[in-house]
Length: 247
Image (cartoon, rainbow, N blue to C red; front, side, top):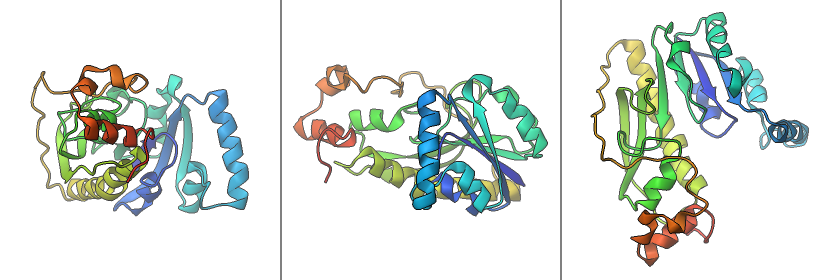
């Protein structure tokens, strides 16, 4: 099984892509590639010469593990289809990247799966961690699901439920969910797909569950959900957003 990761930038989870069973063969880096992003890339490349482990790029990572690297502008995502064909991809994993239309992925033998930071179908959308903290949920988790034309509504392959830690930063919570539990969930899903022994569960068509739209962080204290929080819960949100010291 030849596997391709579609993501946007490098982090601790994408650095583990090569550990998956099968044949991780390529990474597609999708972004707007604005002037700011290009400048950051140049600076990171320069710093990587001095601090290679700290400022590694996705391109560097792919070279180290003998995988192909492709940079795609998010305004021209149709290129993804030809890249997948060129590398003979069997499975795509999407993680922390712009929405990829399913019509570019229909030819894959094993389809495409995505890692989402909530227990779907709750908190569908681009900012699930923030909204779960804002809703003061007791349990959080990750979901590996198939891609569909409706955002985060595809069939569920794997879910991991964990107790949500309080008064932690976004970086700490993201590491727990993505690097620790998320990678394990992806790895288990890939192995089951290879073995042909997994039947995904269809998501419930529920309309009254909380969603997780982007763009609400700036004035979060004015949101109705914030008005209902007590002092400890408000501190929890502030710690997550870096407005208070996490413990």
